[in-house]
Image (cartoon, rainbow, N blue to C red):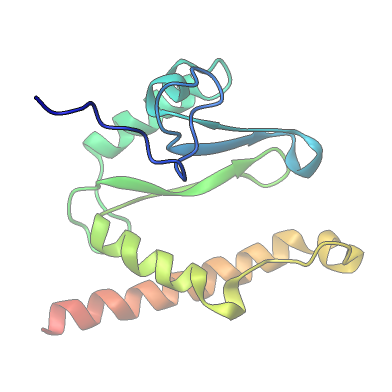
Length: 147
């Protein structure tokens, strides 16, 4: 007989049920707002996020990757009250490329905390970021197709 698996002590538990490992970080209200980590089950039941998550899951099931056109597997992006929704349907290969792009030092942050001038230009910074991101992804898809 084997002993039951013990949870990984480094794995944070869901802030709601305190039973399952957290898989999503959500925040409401920006930097000063509420921030929680939830498991997938509690995320879908969350009054503020659950309906959105269900709509996004339906979009993934029916959609195609924005960059390469294969069936979508996930969503990349986010939502804020000031900038609105900026979600893109993507396949896992393109998701990996997007993750690489975002982790590059020059893309680490659209603005620095305390930089008031940059805060006023967030929309312009975001547009530039999205343009560079889309150019990067276009190149990556072309490279994959050439192989």
